[in-house]
Amino acid sequence: MADSDKTVETTLGAIRHAGMRVTRPRREIIATLARLYVPATPREIHDALDGACDPVTVYRCLTEFEHLGLVHRHEFGDGSTRYQLVDPDGGHFHYIVCRRCQHAERIHACPPPELEAAVAGRGYSQITHTLEFFAICPDCRALHDQRGREE
Image 1 (cartoon, helix red, strand yellow):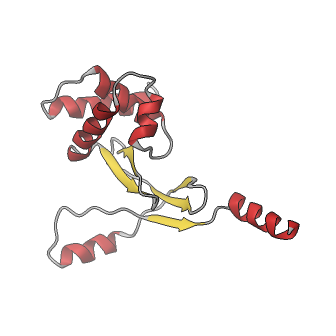
Image 2 (cartoon, rainbow, N blue to C red):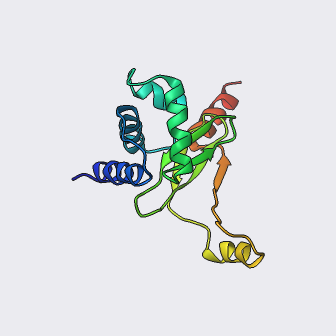
């Protein structure tokens, strides 16, 4: 079984375990999220579904999945919320996001556990985090440099 198939089945199992039905739209949304390498907006997810369900269903399902801890929400600074499946092992990703073209690239690192321990040390519980870096990607920088030479 491929990793994305395993992720889909694990996620659908979590939906069943939460007492929810595994409907066709829920299955399709989970399968679509599993195929995507980077977080996607509800509109991008809906477009990828090719009419399998309406946009309201996509939003409703993503909200349910977030409450169940099955998706991770990302804000890339452009006013659009993006979603990505949480790995079955609970892992998540962080990103570098281009300020110009919105290209997102995964960073395979996470802040040190000492940071979350410091938050817990102040009496907080149920701690989560997000981390995105915003910069200009090499392609946009090269395009900008090229335009500067042409003027």
